[in-house]
Image (cartoon, rainbow, N blue to C red):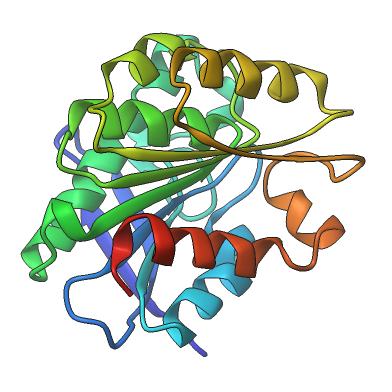
Length: 223
């Protein structure tokens, strides 16, 4: 399917570009956050699968990536970001939530899925938006460029579901997933061998996309 290209502006003046994949199930959406150095296109196939399952999906280019390079003072590039500027990507996620709310989606019907630093952002975002029902974190870390997760996982409500996914040879993320599960024993976890990092796991594990959709259905999305 051909997604709708959308734009919105964050509170600090960054123009964010996204792809909108409308589904058929009322009030159900997934927000997709990519890893570095990828763009929203890394979610394209998964977003299409979600839409086919009836779930709307919004994949954004985080600031400094892809087409989201227009800042209030000129061009921005994530390769030049400080850790503080990396942490400011959470502002993009907040603006994406506002965009979804303007279209009638309530927080209770929105799940967040992220890869690598996008996984950390997804966890952090759910911790500050406690009506978000579910988070999927592909290859999270304990601290990616100042975006931390141990403190944020501890702040999640018991009702908020989380699925952690990592591959054994990706040691940093593999260890992080186990550490996060120790903090949140009811978290679900998927562990692979030689599957790679982040959304690259989709190539190594052809069933992973369907597994994630099944988890969303069974965990919280009432699909």
